[in-house]
Image 1 (cartoon, rainbow, N blue to C red):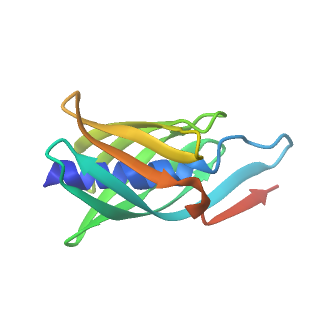
Image 2 (image 1 turned 90 degrees about the horizontal axis):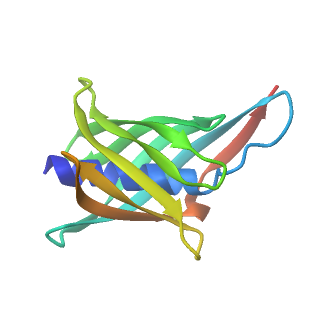
Length: 138
């Protein structure tokens, strides 16, 4: 169950990141508010969705993932200029659940893997257009 929750969290993080690849030039920092659903499939072919809410500030991703049943996961990571993402999922007690990576496919969807214990536990995907808002701060 923990693995599925982590996968869902990762997928959410990925979809959020997909729309925020490049940071604009200039003195202000770029802050993107995110809320999206991530779709996942684990190695046993179980599937589901999870809510992600967070933000990206100058390429740093932070947020919370909500896989259901009152569970909350802490998502941290980075977004590269090409839209690829990498990061971790932790419990609210700072226990590592897993790590995730993702990149944009030809349909502008973010796709990736969730690793638990160093092995792929799930794959995830999220459409880039689900990114909620962008704010440029000076």
